[in-house]
Length: 534
Image (cartoon, rainbow, N blue to C red; front, side, top):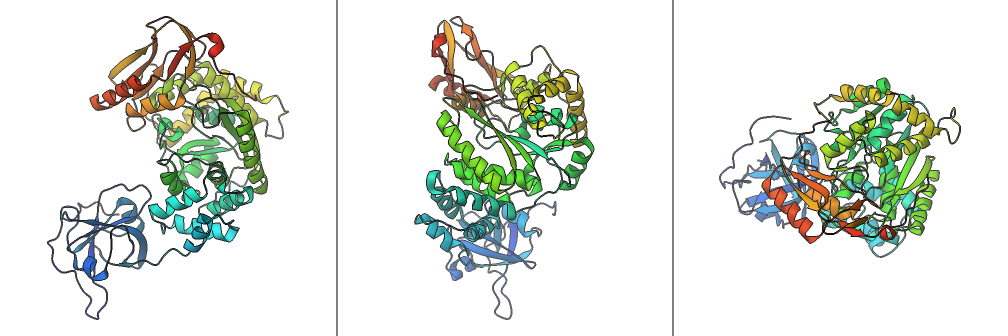
């Protein structure tokens, strides 16, 4: 891709027309707007092509250049600094797909409806779809044939109980087929995943080095945060590069038995990334879509054994044991159909895990656990050991019940931190002093309004406060917890500290805390009941 400066807008002159009556050609211009997995095209309102073709804003258009074509949603502009009359602007996602340089000549025409639109309409009418229907829909989603409106219609039509378990299997299968599938040519290939919703839950960054040090293959490809204060990839990026070419990722896994990388470069279940861009702003996370999303990514990554963490708590995604059991059964049904060995574990989701919320704070907690630091959060250590133990027990050489002890010995002996350092070096290390992390210089403290016991911590509100403070985009922003559930506090005691790097972020976080601190102070008997299955 060219690194030249973008072309300046051209005056509103007539586009270049073909001498044989072929469609008028426009000069492509990279419009530096991140539309997040949506192809967007831009035409000036006074452009003759816009008027002649009868285009309308938000209509679907097809762009042709250099033997390639893409579909995009049309936006109409009046500002020539964005795009001139002789130009066709393309968003970042669209420009990367079409693969030409600024200024290359292109044509634009009305687009035909996606081939799967009939299947989408049937689903909107409440009909049950077959495997080929989902294949057609997922193919069109992957190839960006759907507008955001059509994507939203599909997400809403498959929300909650609108997919039966067979349809969830069909959707999972179709999502796997639409992307790359890795084959490591050995068994077992292990992975661990959490359904999310619990801040600070960075157990993957502990499980991977422990399991890899045991000799098991654990190629961990993770997503970035969308609505949370940090994903595994965001936190690992404090320590090392996570955007790795697929060839380098293969080499690291072969040499070190594990990695902690961003999955976006691997093209694993690409439709999932597009669907997430619609689901998260709508706060939709239906069981069927969750199962298809998680299992398609894991199977595409070549995993044969998966430990799945389902936290339960008053402010977790899953809030009761019956709900967790229903979700477990759906995961197990689809995993069995896909020949994936699945171990579902119910864990404590009543509060954040560890002390830090935000990339740098969570990286600090992870490194303290790996270094067996006295300041390491014990809940993060214990949870990671138990999850790693369950994965280790998938080895045919390990007896059931022995995994926890093996994982603890690997961590206590220093083999886990040695393996983590190998992976960090291989991925491209970054300087990070976990003993003295350079947290955001702007901060304020939230104090207990009265004496008592910490009887409730709102995961959603604490995550929201950390996001307002700047996390995950600002790595050193977030929330540092000083008190956890069950702790006795005096009036005025510091419950947590908020860090930010910019005054506006600090003020946004402060206003969020004024609406709700996320902490409840009460009696010991007010602490919610614990559900775990370790």
